[in-house]
Length: 283
Image 1 (cartoon, one colour):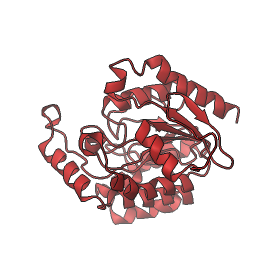
Image 2: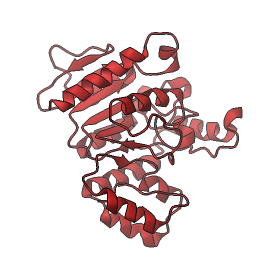
Image 3: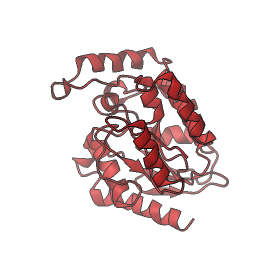
Image 4: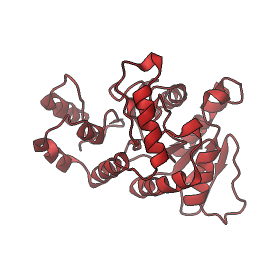
């Protein structure tokens, strides 16, 4: 089963040999870059599209969804903003070629843990082309995933840095970097269908982890039952169970305004992932 492609100086033949050695039972799935990103960047010619035939139906469906997300232009305000940021850049990233488009989720198609963030960072995911990649929030998330066995390495700096996720998929409620990290309600609504489709395709998900109140509110609006009693409330480290739905886990977002002020400490943060690991281990 083809879980991804290695891009760069590695030949296609070497890549296929690598996946043959891994086998379909490997605990890790390559996440950087996905076939979607390779196709969008024009790095594969049309003759190699037959490789899609080697993917599982679920993987192929996620790739199609990813391409749909990347081509989305539903929110003119956000499209204009990410384009402007990509052109203006900031001094420290002047040499970067920014992604500057909506971002799909990424990770293991057989994920049991779905992590839902707010949106790509203007100079993080919007620059690198992958969520939680190239910014401080990504540093905290990937390090915690690594320390609890959900990732193979503690850093996520680019789509090509060899990051692999185990039984984990990462997404967000908004797919474009929003102005001042504050998406509008209609922009969240426009993206909600992508989140619901990811959940439909990721049919092994047992835990949904929401990072921050916006992600929590969005999931309560579109994913979880509004009439649940007691109704979940947003707090750090909240664990909630539902009948015939994944469990909901709530956490503060690992933004600098939380991590640098002490509102979210490393012990608090890592504790959430340790409990999720224990929950899934007992599932």
